[in-house]
Length: 166
Image 1: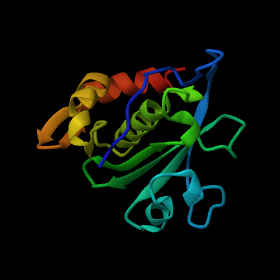
Image 2 (image 1 turned 90 degrees about the horizontal axis):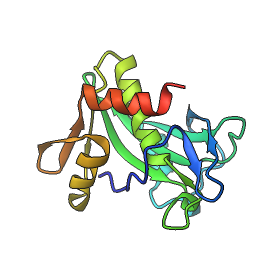
Image 3 (image 1 turned 90 degrees about the vertical axis):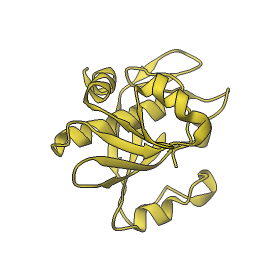
């Protein structure tokens, strides 16, 4: 279930103190990789990384790969990408977060990956009930059934242009 606020759609990630924007890259996390410890995250990312049906990616600032800004777990469903989990690093949560744009950046990546795989940008996820309206507004997501939502081609293109057209 996706339970993260999309704080702001930025062109990358933005420092909340200085307003400076930083280019990012997304790197696949491999089994046994150091630096993602249980104490730093709410979700059990070790289980996600070890699940052979899932791929986990980390968002980092270019030239600063040691500090993970956020994580996403996805599954390739052979016709679309399913987002299992998304989480911002602890220092990117709450009203005193260091960077804005982390969740939006990760969702845009999932949309881009969907296009790369020939799925027309379609991404689905299960939303926490109280956030359904938020995802409709911020991501352009559509309700499929109950709390199941998806991002269609036009909404995916909008997100990709926001984050990846530099």
